[in-house]
Length: 354
Image (cartoon, rainbow, N blue to C red):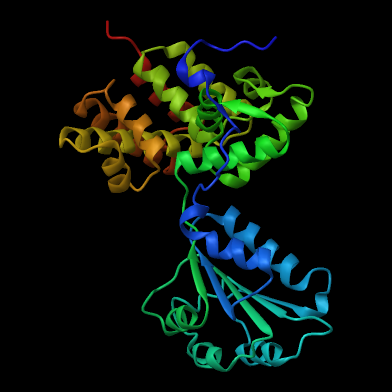
């Protein structure tokens, strides 16, 4: 029989909720409705930092509009797109189908240029669906305004931990599995919130726990790979506890897994910098969500930085950050070997005061 810690949180199972809105409740409703109904607007723009959602919706549009018929699909990528050719394609009548789909990806036309397409959108036939997939946009751009006037714009930004947890729970539920809230938090804390990476780790968990109903922390430990940022959090925890052995063990494990010392050093310096920011902002009586926004990180990362920063003084954090920069400079100038440089930094800040 499966047993769980006897806490309120651990007793609550994801997978019982009937309404999985996550971020979609706010801004994916129109996309989902159009895809399900097969009734499309002339033009769509998907943009933002969450690459997984953008690529997922691009695949859904291709399947829903063109299906297996590649004659009704044209794809363009990059900043040197022949706009004249694109317009000619848009004017082409679909072959034995209701719509023709044109996908334009990473064009940069929503930052500069795009005037010709902006003028054309109003004239584009109803039988053509134009899908833009971009990273960044300028809302003052003519093409952006033209898309807004003729179609639908959806920003797919980084999701909150809560949104990602419900999204992940839905994947488990579709596979006939459940997971406690505590274990979901444990999974995200170890794997991170990159939806592409998380989806692959969930696939591993589903294969591993094939014959059980509930995913546990033990399953997560058995098959999931901790991301580098999470391993750095563990290393900083060991430094703050002045546990030199564990600090160096963390480092040697990363080296054994072929992580470059300079990348590890960068992440250590970044973490000291984030903790310093978190400590300063906490001293200004800002809440966790405000701190996350000010730091430009997700809410749960800000929470970790706040908690870790309590183990250091402002002076210690400034010193550690300065030493990280100095170590980087010494390595790059050839004054010291990269492995020795990073080890010396870790030894210095994890040693117990005599």
